[in-house]
Length: 174
View 1 (cartoon, rainbow, N blue to C red):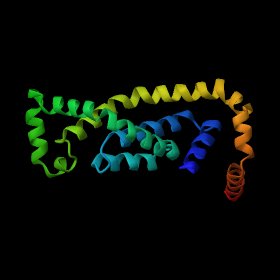
View 2 (view 1 turned 180 degrees about the vertical axis):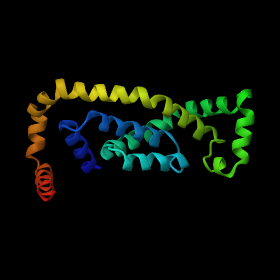
View 3 (view 1 turned 135 degrees about the vertical axis):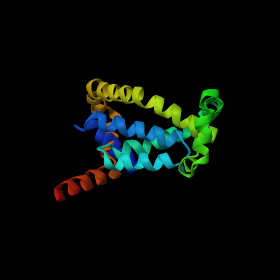
View 4 (view 1 turned 90 degrees about the vertical axis):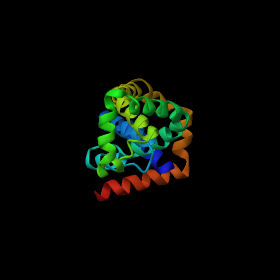
């Protein structure tokens, strides 16, 4: 976990494109909000690995948003119940449930459907919010954090120095 945090901090403090980090946070949001063993999570994992996404950001966001999901589950269930009870959608839900493929997606479960809809709705706005926050962090906070007493203590830590040596060695190999 500490290694992932170092990788995320390295990405935040480097010239890594903020869109890659922000996209990692957003994919982590979808993974964290929705039940883990869902078919759509396979698609999200594939996208994380196929696109240029910061994997450390995705994994850390996944953990964070999983914790938040427990607090938001009543909202997700309420959203799923609302969508499944819409009279205009009853024929669609029935057709989907009668199909083997759609039954595997578990969209007939209120929690799965509600959490996926909420995470998809939140995906785009949060992508831009995370991107703006990363840019503001780099512009306003990065220099002061690098000079802070905490960072000086952290950099003098043997674990951090070992990580820096490993990173230099790894970069020399590539």
